Length: 76
Length: 245
Image 1: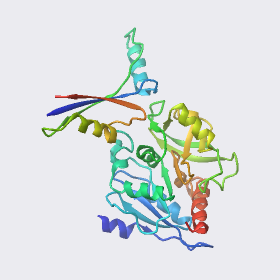
Image 2: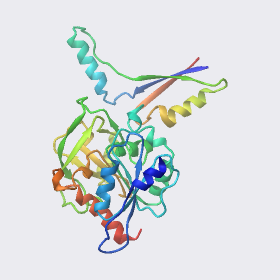
Image 3: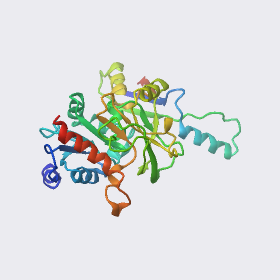
Image 4: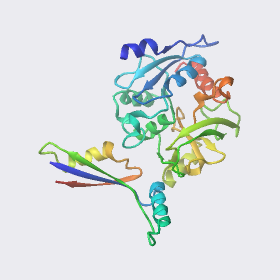
């Protein structure tokens, strides 16, 4: 089985990389991009029977820093 | 590997003028690159220093001070310090901290301390997105710690920085608490990385854990451009020599 974890900065946490991408898009002539947020996607190949709770524990312990990040888990 | 490290990694401390010999352990992670500089700085201040590989599960007996060095542990993968903060030795470092032991985390070591939760907040990517490597003027915000008591109140010192992720971030309640409890150790006079309230270093509630982005171990010899780091090492080693903790 496979799980996909999406890790994003919490709202309100300044994302300097997202801002830089936003400015770069503007300078390339892409008007109308008002905000860019950059995150990461982590794909996990898992033994059958691994539960969403197990993946949640992985997120809490390592994959996300919950001081500044949120995570979303997609199974399958 | 471990044997070699152990044999090569002992830095004999000079005889202290008073009190007992302070024992320090410098933790070495894959990708640490300021570990030997930190060991030399501590040894020059009179400590007996042992290098400890991250796969160990115990600190050497009788350790007074643990140093978490700068560098790029685990290639900064996932987040700076994230993987180092889950390595085998960290349980022992946390135990040492919980017993009231002193811990000094510099640069990547500061990032590791926030990832372990021993210090609050996070070090995020510099606001300018660039790696910054230069010497910074820092204000000593508190002298209420063994690390900072040797600097005069509101003293200004010059210490180099070299980091890509030194943008200290925490929620406003945490920042207010740090300010209110006088736990901001150093601030930048001219903020190089966007860090909240110009923070360059913070202390734990018991004031025995210091995390800082600047590198005091790089200014302990006039030949290397300054001595402003010596006061910190002499302060903490000296305090431990007489405290007998």
